[in-house]
Length: 125
Length: 339
Image 1 (tube, rainbow over the protein chains, first blue to last red):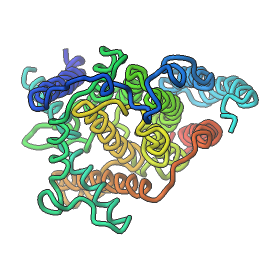
Image 2 (cartoon, chains in turn brown, green):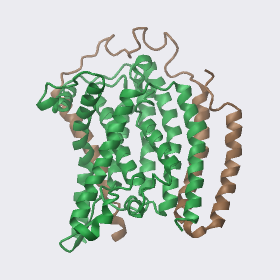
Image 3 (cartoon, rainbow over the protein chains, first blue to last red):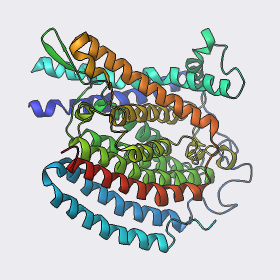
Image 4 (cartoon, helix red, strand yellow):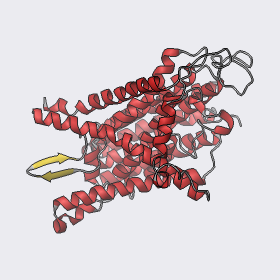
């Protein structure tokens, strides 16, 4: 039981923050003038060039680079997931732990250098 | 038992209230400071020295029309601001303002909870915000919003790694993921042995909160205002509030994790007693927080914005090797001096 008490704040702050959001939005909906949509008022703001579809589609294709960054991110985020538990106990693992992690990061660095050479971090500018 | 639960709930409500109460004066302070740096007055009409300007702005936003653009995905459009707002408040439950206060035969922790996964919890919550940004940009059905959210999400996931790597260095030295324990471990602030890590962390914190010189998602001149361009009225204020709450959080983290919290107040304990030491430590901690916030504003007033490719290069080709170097330094120190 003692153990779960430490996790109560997550619940409390979650409920409090959500409640703050919902209640203040409700308050705003009472105070603000009613929104009357018109054909031009609800058009997305795109500097007057026109609604989506005139210059390409909003939900169409976009640069593949964002996708490559996301892939490299997944690799390094997984690395982080391994690093955190290792970092807590490195003091008792000693030299063995250091070498073990050095090998792991060395393998990862090969992939990092490959991604670098392939231009995953260049934006063609 | 019941008493303990009530105390925890009470403290979590305080933790929730901190960003809500500090952010409005913070926004006013930033605008005043920016004004001074740029040789103008800044807001000075509402209240003494314009101190109530933010409140006036909030009232104005409350009374604004709430517009949802045509073709927007309504459910995601409404959900997105909450995904940014709620995590930026939830993170405060593990942030310490100090360590412990022994008073009237009780021990009061100056934090809502001392979790053994505190650092992990904060790293996890900062990633939730990316969902909010992607949703906001995609749901708006506006090209500016979409481009802003794409840029912003790529930037945030990249710098999230740097944030994590810089924190791993600290965790290695402290041997714990609990934030109060990390503060207690610092006989010397970790910024001194881990100066590289501190640099990486500060850069990553600037980028994670979308602040200058990494404020590309906003980039007023090119993208109008990025992923929240279609949001108006009170929904827009959620984005604003969460940005400043995150900034405040980053300042607290830097002060606690790298600058040693209340350091060097703990060395005075034999001379001035426990109560004054704790109060002094909290005072020192808060001065570090505000010093860092001042640096935040100062950077915004001074540095121009990075170009997008420069920012991504800086992240992946400079900060990542530096972060790994910092990790190596931390590990070697842990096995030698800190053993």
